[in-house]
Length: 120
Image 1: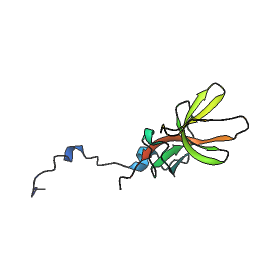
Image 2 (image 1 turned 180 degrees about the vertical axis):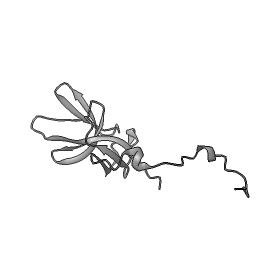
Image 3 (image 1 turned 90 degrees about the horizontal axis):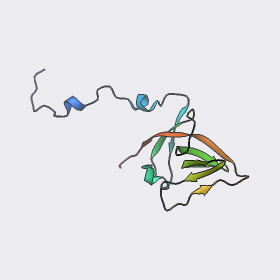
């Protein structure tokens, strides 16, 4: 081909074979996408209406961002493990940490692997 205009200076840096499906492993059966409601995770760059890619097969560790259910209420928080004590922490200092009390039911639904934010 003979160019009829100026070459694109970014042409050498454009990814020709890019797929969000492959990058985030979206087709795997243990992966799902969830939409976040609220601003409690903004410090982790997870904003209101962000999408998060969640891995059900990954074992959470202290410091993992997780999707969980506390007393059947879904939430996205940072999991803090302190011996036998569990704390769910927001990434926004406006929200206090939530200490899990005896008798409360906590279920971890998966570990957040990626976040996608729309700028519109």
